[in-house]
Image 1: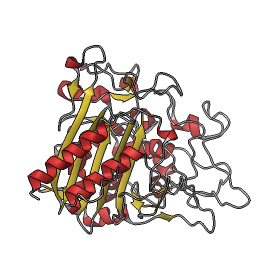
Image 2 (image 1 turned 45 degrees about the vertical axis):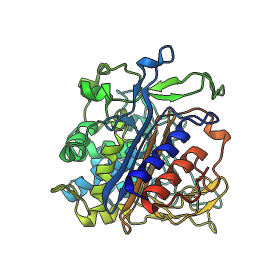
Image 3 (image 1 turned 180 degrees about the vertical axis):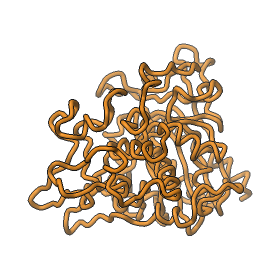
Length: 434
């Protein structure tokens, strides 16, 4: 079968997934990399949906930007490694030296916290106390017991009789890690987090997008996808109902700067710029970052990282041990972790595991994204030099009510990944994954 015919069949299969009346998707943008090169790009559905007049809906294109949720963490990790290479950030130093105040888990006052722990989700921080705070709230006020915004201290883990949860000992997937990391990066770079990431990572590779919607260009905002759910209340899902905007519904207008942002002092609280989830980027932009990693830190003559830094990102920092509780692996989804990079070990069972494709056979590295109706994946195998990217801009049924056939992922995610792998990597139409 010719590549053109295979691509046409893949387009048809993905279109069927997007328009499945039982579990519809608002939009889908997908990219496949093989032998280090982009071999497939597909766009489906709409970045803006006008329920009252479908003719005014705007389709997804290769330029469409999405708020990619936690895939942002992997991109932030690339920015952190640039600072490491420049000697401005030490992965194993006490981060108190960057923050300007002593940061300790009060339950483990003698254990310093490092950037390596933040990047590998082993810092002992927790999301229980929240991970979004007002722009003017300093990180010190949130994390130090005497701080005005400390509350009940749910930001910190304490050990249990059968589990050592001291810094560096226990994995727990935590968004707050990245707010702290972003603040450390600001202190190390002297720049506001979102602007540092633009200048250090995105701009050198010619990638459109930003961590701060307020600094997108007018063209970028016009190409920004609204994220949707078919949900009118907390639990009121209706797959036949209207698409309801969840975030980034800017109607083509650059959002006004937040009050007080001009007075923000870098190094006080980068949580305001969402290092954990705020990146707006296209699937094509993510593909360039994937190629960068597959090429050992260089792309189109631009060297962003050394091969040693790419190796450090991928090097395993934590591995789930079922025999002794050393972390929460979220129904088998999280089994191993590098520095801001998940290791997918191809372990699968109904509703459980990190398997990426129906019949197994793909191990790799990367990150997933899930928020505001968005589902996304960025996964690659540096040995086979292959990679899969998808960004789904809205879901029509409650993800908590449907489990995957062979993984913790949702059924539509399994179907998209399997279709991309079978047709664009294997060139094999056997088994539809439906």
